[in-house]
Image (cartoon, rainbow, N blue to C red; front, side):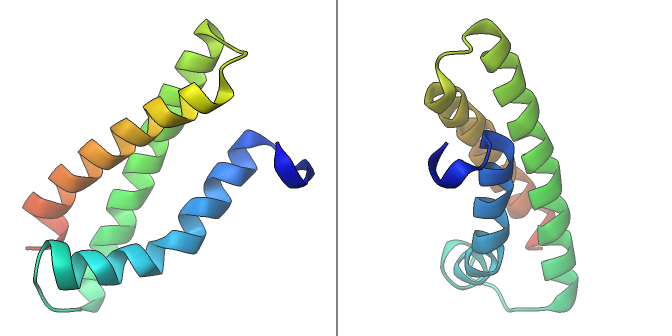
Length: 94
């Protein structure tokens, strides 16, 4: 990977950098609700759950096709996004 870091460290760095921005944009635009500490804590829980699903999906697809690192990441992103939207809509942003 670029900058000499592995795929998993790169993956977690991207999520950590984007969590605050994602929370604010989701609260303001996607779900049109108000900022609160409880929602942020729930949002962090959803991010953790989704990240685990992302890692499992990536690991699974990397065992099937180890030369396709970016494809595995894309597949992991699909799981992260779909599960994240559902959990945020019906739980963390309520």
